[in-house]
Length: 290
Length: 266
Image (tube, rainbow over all chains, first blue to last red; front, side, top):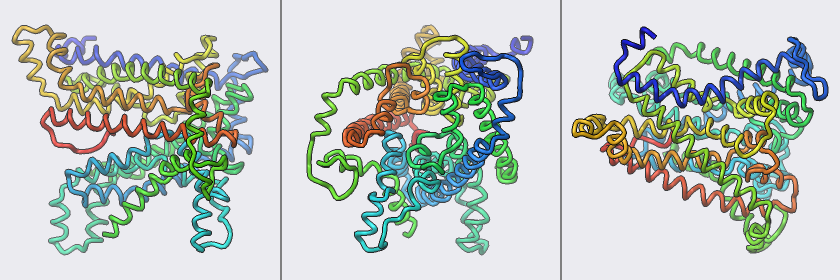
């Protein structure tokens, strides 16, 4: 507390203020997470919890092929969603930042964010309507004569999950990239052009590296929550599109095996954290230059 | 030019599902597919005569209003502290409060379920969802309110205190009116998030479902789907109105602080 004594009155008040939301986050996030961690080392026998410390849940979570398969698939799907979403989002962020008049930028951002705030469940369900065998996409393509029979590779599999989630997380990817692009000093781009670089090389050697912090942020902000989604896999994924969150949900709410569910949740979270940290480390060059 | 075409195609991709909603909500047929069968308002009428739905809507409204108020209060504390003098660990503390923004929702849901049911042996109800929604809405509130508080000229508050106002009086009479648009925007955004949240509500709702949980139940019955479309249409219209108000408030807040507009909510 000696160090606190040196702080100004303003800093002390700031600590007092911030302690309220901080305490809330500790009580409702940190402690519950600790409880989940604890549970993952216990076992459940019908309704009784056996409180002896054991790694059995982790052996099961990592050893059983079904859980391993779900985990690998979740990482692959989340990875594909991230790649697709970020690649689709970048040109939009670029367009709004570089080609839209400043006074109309916030209108564009507003238009981009609106679909994101409307009922998530119904949006996912409507993708099922669009992608289905008799769906909007197939009937339109058939009607226009582009295809002879309905496409079946777009519903009840991992593709459908990727399309739907790429839609759901679009604004999450666009906004960080937009913010990074907005920070770029345009004189750097002009300098590059003056010094003889073409449009393309200027983009690759000046604009893109400077936008990388936004791209990294966008990738993380899409990747991390995607792993935890169970609505989209359930509604459009079919049997081969289910993800780890579906299994966590099943363990908790159907099989009533909270310890195993807790272990699966911890394993999934560790996986996400390791991949996220690895990704940041791989991109450290771009992040440091800022 | 090609970028503009891409941008418009992308907007069509973004709006495709929402554009279909009203089409099927007014379609006189129980199958959600083309070709359309004719015009009807039957599905909207069915909404009015479904007591289970009314109960779910009522639950959702109670939860959304309470969480919005609580999350905005927490957000104001954090955003205000963020603009004050630094103290050791400030970045870490604020970062931790923002953590629910990037944490998969199922993790929040599972951890609270374990604590409430297994550790304390309590029964689930609206209050458990309120606690969780407050937690996940607070980071959004902080993001919105940060803008409002950072743009504030603190010398105005100091002037009020020099002129004899107490600290609280200065806050209430000077600061609060200046950040009011930000507060309204924060309330509306967290209200919208809570009203729409499903993943956590599904884990933590007791016997009385919230509206998204109720909709989830309906999705299993093909004959009830047109009713879901009608409900969805109303919800989308409502969200657009709320968000437009939130956006206008945010802009007014920026204008009041004499700043130029730099971007959206997040």
